[in-house]
Image 1 (tube, rainbow, N blue to C red):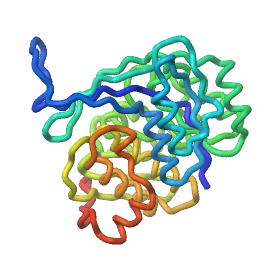
Image 2: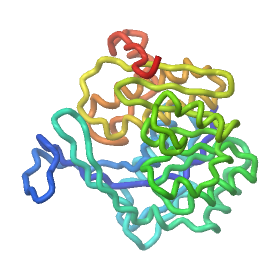
Image 3: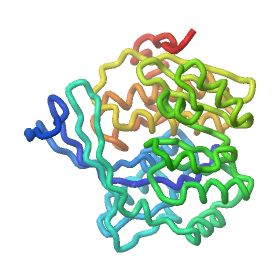
Length: 309
């Protein structure tokens, strides 16, 4: 079983359904409003746990964070390390349009309250077997990477949301880089998609890379092993947690010694089910349901890889 220590963001998501995104200077009414638990960190912990991994979540919530705690708890995530402080929890304002696309405004809140002492205590409690997962939504990401690497833990980073801070992190210490084509091109310092993986391999020879291309599928490289996948032709309702679902399922499988092809297959099916449901963490499917959907053919025929040839 995969073991994951996720120093992950936790957000209260306010999801506004709109016919089209609000433009500068425009005021409009939303079609609906729902509040969900989210944040890349929380979504990825829920996804990895529902996929079957042993997940420890390290992070901070504020006095308004009961809903976040309960969501992780009900999904079997180990909350020994989750701490509460007097601040305000992270939150997000999310617009979702009629095509299921979203735009997101984040407030970091307690996600920016990690300390070196807390990081040390969390890693000591977790031990030196497994993988440390980070996203670019908390503070001290570089410190977490360095400390995890020094302990001999594997390290994975989902370099999103992408900004200049990513270039200050010790990426040479990363075992798994999970990025989309825009993030990958920025880190690889190239313009063409076809050059992303070769450039990353040259810059970071020991790094494994999972590159997602949205509607065109995904490709992964681990040493000399490579696999790619298309997507299922499902109706998209909300893409908010699709990438996090994909990541959580993929890492759970890949760290459990599954082939890249098998890991991609399960992650693709899980994310295809996720986009058919509104919300963030609540849209992540259970492993048994994903396996049943694949076996019964409920997702339709898997499309071909849509990247470069």
